[in-house]
Image (cartoon, rainbow, N blue to C red; front, side):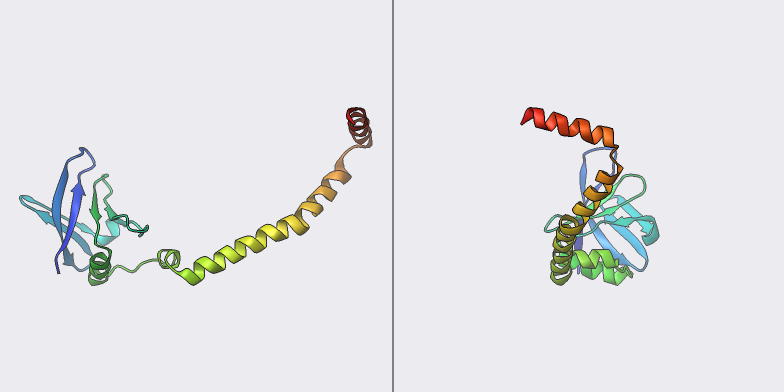
Length: 142
């Protein structure tokens, strides 16, 4: 399988079309008169965000953009890269729905129980003189 990418050197805006080759535990790219081999541990593999190209980032600021997600996933497996649990969870519909439910529950709980609790705690800490002045000010406005 042929995996193509666009290489940017991080110093200029020049794009170079490269072949991304399989080599165990290494990221190997090659173009006419150009070759770069880096250890897999020395690069950062960007996460998949929708249909945007996946990115392989080098420590010196260079990067390769790869648009074919299926071929890239196959290539990652071939070189021994294992995606993190966070990467996989971001693409999981059940986890996204559970997270949405958890967020709604947390917001409701904070409004239902947290807000009254915090208001009570704050009200008990307001000095009597300040409470009287606030009451007088409110009555004069009303």
